Length: 276
Image 1 (cartoon, rainbow, N blue to C red):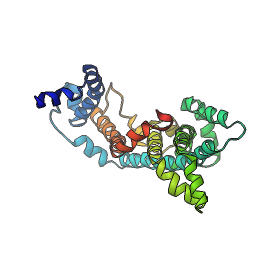
Image 2: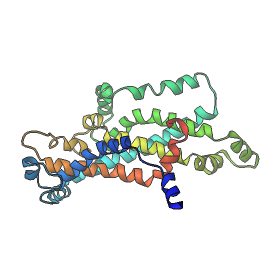
Image 3: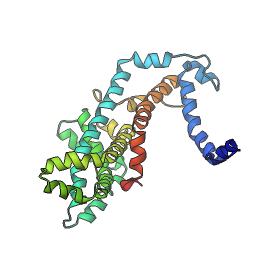
Image 4: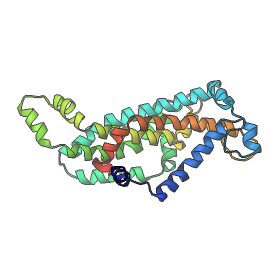
């Protein structure tokens, strides 16, 4: 009797959720299959399992200095973008949340309008500006260009988290003799930690997958792996399907690992702030 009650109380996964999950996972599974078999096998036949099983595509990628450099380049400018965005967006979000000044609400809203523009629209002026500054083909150029899109949405997200923290906590700490810096770092930051992780995750996702500006601002030394992959990623003709699939799998790993590592913070963060 008790066993039947426990089984009845367990939540059941609906068929629609299973179908949707399968719809999302089938392309990923097929990508892994293509990456684990030789390129000739990928062209000649379709198979649900790698046939024959081979790691030659991954060996080729890791054995090529250009592929490895492209991977390192992508990780480098993405990390720079996340750091710069948080350093800029956090003080701005605090100002919007704690102070009222002329046009503050309108400025917060219209800051998102820039995020609505496709990166291709500003490609030409951005390239000209960074070329005049001597920053073409540098990691900093790509990181700063991506900040044009990540900073506005980061301010919007973090403002919601800061506003959720009662200002009375800061006022009480100030009465107790804490300095503004101590209040900010010891009281406010621990309260909005989930928001910081959510913001960093959003910045990572945008900067990792954005290739238009990354391609326009780099030539050789800072070229990311996503741009390099375009050379072999065509699905038709004489191409290296296995190598392109292996690179695609490697590009999925950082995002999946980050999402798994931050899953608890992300779950809490999505239930708070402006990302709800």
